[in-house]
Image (cartoon, rainbow, N blue to C red; front, side, top):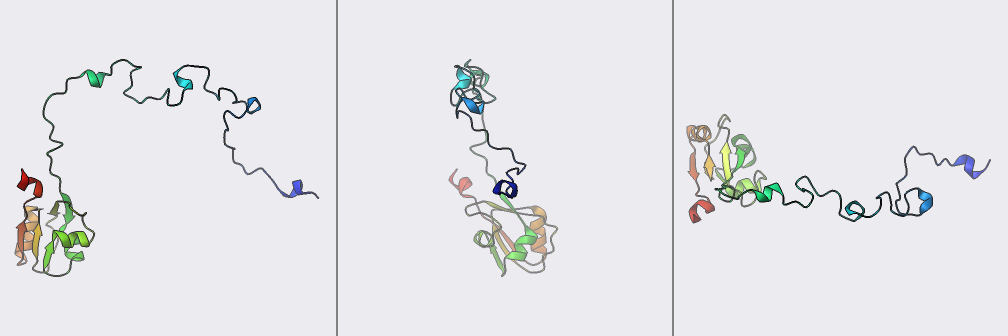
Length: 156
């Protein structure tokens, strides 16, 4: 018995293709890239779906006109009323309390949603927005709702 009988090198895995490591590898010299041209250069060949072979791209030829609401859009982070009642103890549920409870990120504008939740205690909600059904559910339980003015709306 010898060492080669004990150790098996057949792991069932295919080895890495080591290109440009000599003529004996089968992918030596040009490394399977052919000769010359853009495809043989680093960063060549795959230029992305909008590349048109150096021709002035179609998306750059189109006129840039009109209004885009992207820069002015105000988005709110939705927070479920049931989760807010479950995770925040006490009477006051504020933006800071919701951030501490992990229901929203720091600096996010918060909107309370889903008024179908059963509100079992009187709470004072101080958030940026709230749906009509959620507001009715909180007020029916003897609570109060204060809608805060977002910073972007106050500045603009």
